[in-house]
Amino acid sequence: MIKFLKPLINKDFRWLFASQFTNNLGMFLDYVALMSLLVYVWKKGPDDLASFSIVYAFPLIISPFAGALVDKWPLKRVMIVSCLVDFSLTLLLVFVNGVGSLLTIIFFRACSKTFYYPAESSVIKFMFKKDELIQANSLVHGMMQIFKIIGPVIGGGLLLLLRPRFIFTITASCYLLAGFFLFFIQEKYDRIHVDSEKFNAGAIFKDIVNMSRMFFCNYRLLFGFISITLVTFAFYLSDSMVTLFAKNIGFTERYFALVFVWIGFGGVLGAFLLGQEKKKRNLLLLILIGIITTGTSMLIGSLICPIAGRVGIWLFLAVWFCVGLGVSYATIPYTSLVMQEVSTNMIGKASTMSLFSTGVNLLIAPVIGAVLARWLGVSMPFIATGVVLVSAFVVLSFYYNKYFSKKKIYFRKGKNPENQGF
Image 1 (cartoon, one colour):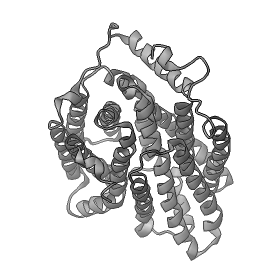
Image 2: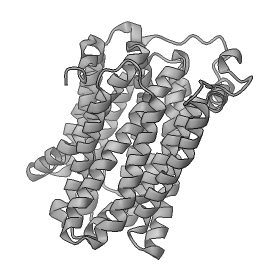
Image 3: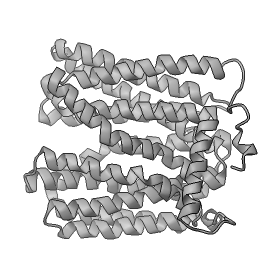
Image 4: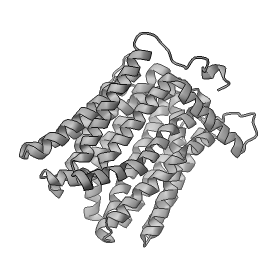
């Protein structure tokens, strides 16, 4: 446990971690309040709930532009301003009376987050050495998973005492406190990346093109990006069908929250295991372990749970525990890989590449999953998730053995970005 918490020795990271803690608390309370307002107060249906995916997806698709700007702006101030924007917009949620105004506020708040996350990644890269990055990212990811466990409990307790609108004032306070903690980070993390080119839309577009070329030229980054894209696509294939699948195998409303609790437990265990101090870690191999763990769990669970009776309920929870574990093993090494391979003046753009793929998958994968469920049964999206991930593991393992197991070939021949002005 001490090794897992070692990044907290860094004083500046402690302030960043405190900010992330309150920020995540606000996010989970906010989600509980939003769902309660829509479903129980306004009595809205599936179409209005589905619109949230679109609202969250579009800002993620344009996130590379935000990352390009972050690479030119003061990092500390970007995070503080983002927290203040979240605070202001969340206060407005107290007064909304319709879905349209609610979604508008949520959209602009999601846009604010696309600036916060790349700035946060850049600061973490500045704070730690290469071999310490996976510990720092494990701690951050572990905290997020802990909130998946305690978030519904805290949110449910507050709903017993307060109306959803009043909970928004608490979440707004969390965002304000998160921004306050950031003031105590040293000014050296507020550095501005000097760019000799004139600051304009053309320069931003050129930066994004260069970043894409770097991901294409660097085999390690390309391997990681393809892997995380397949993981998110497969996950969103079945994510929106969890409620129906759980209901079909015997889960009642009272116990449905256990699914998210067990995902959180698996995620915490994965973060803890990855956070143990080891000087040399094969990040690509860890990503493969995450893919096969998630894929086999989904495939076995989708085939056995519907026919296993009451045992299927417990098996279903075990499946989601393994999914949480596998996702941790895929995402944490990928985040660390990007920080290791990309120079400090490009980390903002690089960190938004996964946000971009998440946004695209969030628009496409749930639609495919819904079609599969409608025509072939509720279990089919989960079977498809397992098949996609197991197949991805087989193909990626072949390329891993070809390019990384025997000799280090990190760049395409003649395309090393270090020699191309990147």
